[in-house]
Structure formats: C-alpha cells, structure tokens
Image 1: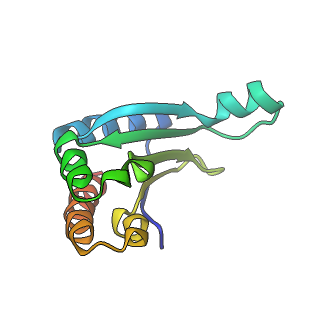
Image 2: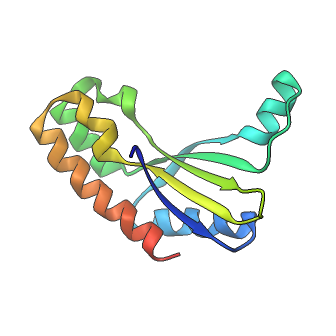
Length: 127
C-alpha cells in the first residue's frame, strides 16, 4: 500500500487542526496546502466532499535526503490527505515514505524513509 491511514469520527476541521498540531510536534511544518473541494469547484465546476492535502516537511530529514540523493526533491514534501467520507468519518492518509522512496533505489534513502515512516505512524496512532 502506498499510504498510512486512520479513520476517525471527529469533525473535519478538528481533524485538520489536530493533524497540523501533531505534525508540528514531531518537527514537520506545512509547506503547501491544497483545498481539493474548492479547487475542483472553481476550476472545473465539479463537487466533492471536504478534501485537503497538506504538504508536510521536516527540514532536517529533507536536508539529509538531499545530501544523499540530490534530485529527491521531486518526491518531497510528504503529502497528508484529510478526507471527509460520506458517513462523515474522516480519513487521515499519509504518503508511505518507504513505498514512495523505494523507486529511488538508494539504500541510504531507504533507511531514512523507514525512520520517517515510524514518526508518521506515531502521528496517526495518537488520534
């Protein structure tokens, strides 16, 4: 599977705020934010439920990854999706860094990805 996931039964806005706080607590900042619901409505007139993508980055991990594999930036930042389901539960889905970075084919990157995955799993576990 290419993502880590946890489904929660809290309001969307609360889930988003908690995700931001939990990522910050483990050293990840949000570099980008895409409101898919708003974007698709504005660009093509299509409606979907609440769906946000946060581009999360830990500067220390990003620096180390760039030192190991300079073009790895095309695979960064780590995307976190917050998705409201039809039953109003919320899926918190985070890109699995091991799955995403295995295409690089560099064992040093794999070690880094495993460490990042453990941190991101701890973020989901705390929900």
